[in-house]
Image (tube, rainbow, N blue to C red; front, side):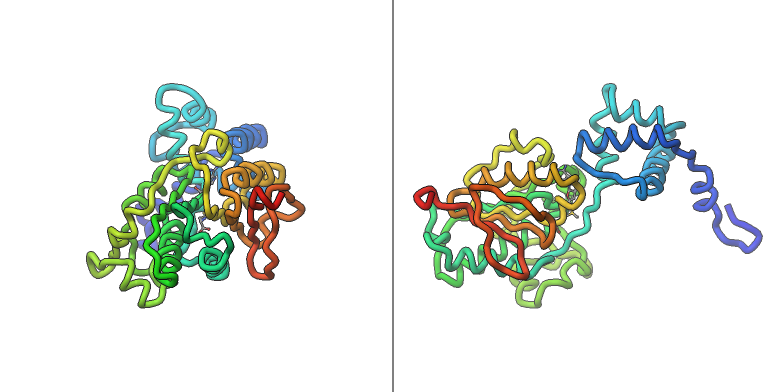
Length: 297
Ligand SMILES: C[S@@+](CC[C@H](N)C(=O)[O-])C[C@H]1O[C@@H](n2cnc3c(N)ncnc32)[C@H](O)[C@@H]1O
């Protein structure tokens, strides 16, 4: 559709035709999202919710928020539609080497921490809320480089988990557009990627095969099969949760570390949290904890 200036107006028309969501409906959606994903959606984000739901409802020809709520809450296709919706509502922004200080800390830890982490039978790292895979692949690069620096040929594995199935599919494919590689120096680009086309870069098979992905909702960590982790990396995920949930999630993660293992969070993502299994690493630039060795207790 074009207006008198010849401009396309379909987008505007579609936005105008979005149904208004009343407060009661908003609270129902807030509760559902909080209960199932932990996502804390304040009233300031009502427009975001309304727009995201509206776009999806239009795509599938759903006439009202009520009908769409019923569609994701119950019935045969509920899980499929819920998966699509969660993907639309979660923030999946991520980068390779997003927090350089934190990754440097992991490398230092692997190379220097007694008992020497690299001489353990295997190094297991877990990226919690891994989005499209940049974080777990960065962890794999860091571990490779730590092993090389120490001239060791140890085994390692990295697991990336997330609630979003489409994000995990991209992570498994391990193919990224050129703009995603801008945070990597040339040496790492050459070493860890094969150029497929002008704009597409694939993670090299050697690195890719060390990283696996799995769908895990952090509200259901008690069922997650990850144990004995050397490094757990959890950044830019807790911020979406209420404070009591953040603490609960972190207590579950602490239990999954091997004694002597390292937990890395994002700066300022939790305050006033203490877990008796862990000791804070003194650092101005990173928020990280070491699990006590049993013999230290
Ligand atoms: C902003 S991204 C962070 C990605 C990466 N950790 C980083 O720092 O670059 C947040 C991720 O958390 C995921 N997420 C949100 N709620 C979740 C939940 N309840 N369980 C697991 N993952 C969740 C989202 O799907 C998204 O991929």
